Image 1 (tube, rainbow, N blue to C red):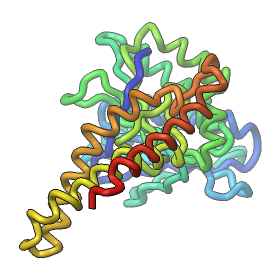
Image 2: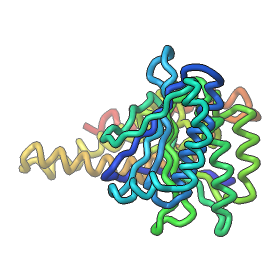
Image 3: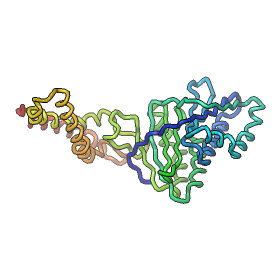
Image 4: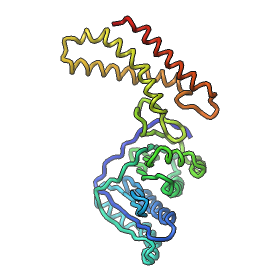
Amino acid sequence: MTQSSTHSTPPPADTVHLTKVSVKSGDVGEHVNWLARLMMVGVGSGTVLSAEIIPSSSPDENVWTLVQRFYDEQLVAEWKANPDRARLLEEVAPKIEGNEIAVTDAVSSTRGTVGSVAVAIVTNVKPGQELTYLEFEKQFQSAQAKQRGYRGVYLQPPTKKTPGIWTTLIRFDSPDALDQWFVSEERRKLLTLAEPVVTSTDYQSVEGSFPGWFPAQEKGGKGPPNWKTAMLILLGLYPIVMLEIRYLNPILHDLNPAAANFIGNSISVALTTWVTMPLSIKAFTPWLFPKKDTPEWVSPVSFALVLVIFALEIALLWRLL
């Protein structure tokens, strides 16, 4: 599967429907599976705008919440009357009567909590393979929801404007927990199952301090360490600022400082975004994203090279002002 950076912003919804499962006894994983199946039935029905499963906020509780968003209350009514939903509720009824779990429905404006680290995933499904992929997502969401540190998932199925595009935002409570799931054998096997029906999968980490300037790793969707990104940004930004002070500031001298600084900063950001950062990323990719077969000398040599370039920049610009 091909991978590239992308970003997705969840659209607003008018009505939020909550289904809460309070697990009192029995296999928690089994009940989470049921909630994931319920989520995928809603997604497959065409009435749900987006859905996410949010686990308990406290380790002492076993309350799992399915958050489904709809354009209007009429679609909520259609969802409640859905025969597949009714069958799933009938399936779990004996466990409710046996006091193993409690299931409650409500309409709310609650949009869920946000974990400390998240990855946006955009999956492009091949035409005609939507139902097959839907079955895969049922397995994937069930497995994912049981992982350590899982804090919820935002799931948006294809729309008329984006046919075949599934948007997912996974949240975990720490980078380590996210990494553990992303490199797990279980996830690898599930991705292998989906490969025949998927055209591409794009990842974008929303954890780093410099999202947008740096791509994400192919595995885990993480960006490079912040200290490396900061060094490369400074490497490209420093000469730009020095040249602006020498040549641009005198031209803007008669302007109000607020306007002059805005113009200068706009030029700095534009040159950094479209000139210096693409060049730096291309030159230092092995250092930013080392692989298993990357030689050990690459890291120290790259670090030293950045320091040498810093020194050269300072030497060349020493007498500029």
